[in-house]
Length: 211
Length: 211
DNA sequence: ACGGATTTCGAATGCCGTTCGAAACCGGTT
DNA sequence: AACCGGTTTCGAACGGCATTCGAAATCCGT
Image (cartoon, rainbow over all chains, first blue to last red; front, side, top):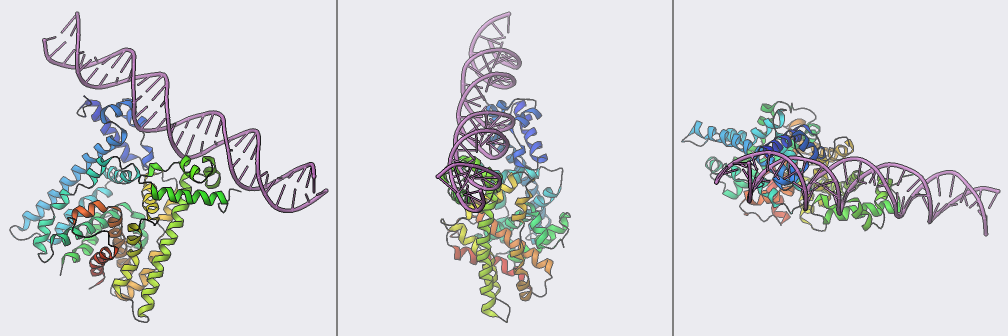
């Protein structure tokens, strides 16, 4: 029944994830290549997932879940460390942007899946609101709001959401437009060291939440 | 001799720009459609530009030039208004991000060309460094550095470049991930009013350049 | 061992961008 | 006016792509 708990469906997802990480261009990902790597045929993709796009979406959602779990785990750690006092602002920001930064610098991570996917969502037809569901899923970001509100009680929730959104924009710029970042900073920052990059981001984001 | 000053070459660029603005998905742009709208044939694209990708790149470069001219014009205005004193920080930031914001909200502008192009550059093969040349062209951003340095002399050029880069990331997030911004801010900001959005961005970016 | 549902397969379809040789067109020279 | 080399346009291919679909094959409860 077109199940995706199937064995070959799993193999297709694994193959797709692997190819998306290896391939440096999205066009390198073809149904035939996925099928070969999964020891299946292209039609298996249509059968199990409906289309290649939906397969990619399923893979991206899986990777997203892992990343978000890491984010929320770091947030929880930051909160617990200071409870019942408000958590440390720098630590909360690091929990928000840290995993993305680390993943994007770790060649063994599946981060390329996410950057390929977000650009694919724009490339492909809007008839797939399936995509927006994944991309616009901000529940895990919402989890940061109450804690930031404790840190900066003079900001209302709109202010905090806005600053959260800006922080995510900075994150995207650094992870996705690396060469631009390099040139603008005159190669003066070691963008390969996640700790340095995260510290730089905290340095810029933290003031948004101070008076 | 494969000239792009040709009449039909111009018509191809215009058709491509128009289609890129209308089409909400990048895949809606096909060589055949461009050709029809330009009263030409698909092979004319290959003949005049080498490939469809290069045609899109040429169009994007043209649009970029217009946007950057507007940015630099606003910067000059901000500088002249206060000369010989340093320009107003808020005005400089508005010059940096304002045109993008206004264009992205103006349905008659060609801003969609740019968002389609940047995502296409990631989608397509890296064998086209032609793309990076356009995207990573940050000279016009560099023009902001000396003026920001006068405003915040305690920052070195790396600091300023980094903050500039962060500001651009915030800009991209707002123009390109609108629905995400909406949800995170609980629909509490009127994202259709460029003045409000720009003011919000200034509110967040300006503190980066204060002590 | 059977039989209905599920899964796999392979050929066929229609679109895509690009190539290529032939036709058309152009402006300057006889 | 006829010619001609260089430039541009065209239309018919080509290979590759995702997807569809009917027929095989496989699976599993009986």
